[in-house]
Image 1 (cartoon, rainbow, N blue to C red):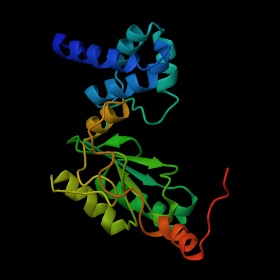
Image 2 (image 1 turned 90 degrees about the vertical axis):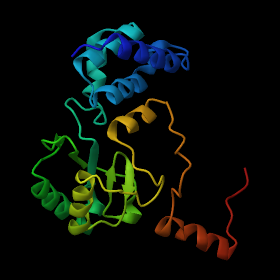
Image 3 (image 1 turned 180 degrees about the vertical axis):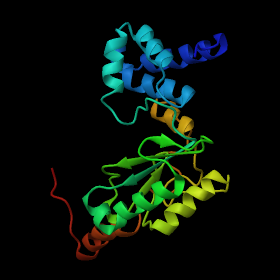
Length: 218
């Protein structure tokens, strides 16, 4: 795959904007990898070469970063990348069972996409939402308190093109490419849409307010 002149021009324009935010160009590697991932749906060979050229580093340096971080995909992700938390708390609350049943239901394993390219699955070590265990994410948006049945229904709805909304955060679920563009530092203006905390996450705050507890003053 080689970028067309139009795509190359657009990528260069976005890349220059991102690079300009850093005192040293090479510091922009992580967001630039998200940028090319937003174009290809994964970090392609051409994407790695583009990043190396824009930053004045070797392709080997770029590849070393790509292979270190799991958020950078080495093969095409689905339009909706579904992550199932299988870390300790989610696992004992049903995360392991969700993963097993969902993987069998969809017919793909870890970091694999369905033949129609609609959905890919990933086993995630922690979604940082233990108070809503078991938790899943779709393109990094939360779907809380899942069961094997609700997880399978969620994926079926995604593949059928139905309106699916996260439990918290934006009411709109973006695609994997759109999410990658946001992670590149090119916002979609949805970051402040909807509550990011709810339910169990706020119980401690409620107790503190009721008892008049305050943090020590600096």
